Length: 161
Image (cartoon, rainbow, N blue to C red; front, top):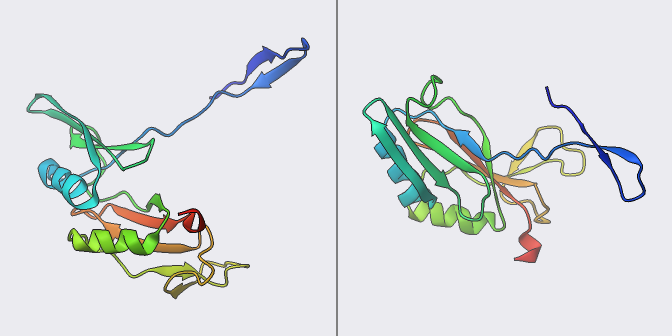
């Protein structure tokens, strides 16, 4: 259970401060660590941070997407979740078309771009292509790793590129 921490501000008034909670690592269950490592580094472009295996029964590989503060871990002995069971991890990108094109060039099987519709009153529906206004959080494309763990690319910040 998360508890609030009492704190006194500059005026001596007691306030309640909630600790910062930051997602740092997501563990992905994979069946072949080396195959997944090659996919994430060579095809998707993640950086290899750690590859540690003190024994044949345990291995942890940590990878970080470019520009992200959150990493993924794959390995042996990390989780009992079935390989390929993680769904819809979001990677936010500034230019969805350029990212899709790059991943396709690297051999990633990526779905067609789609956008929310109706944008102003979204009810879960999608239409093909980019959001005509290139609005934040409105356009998506999906891909999966070799085991089936799925990812969603979401566009945000196109106008600031």
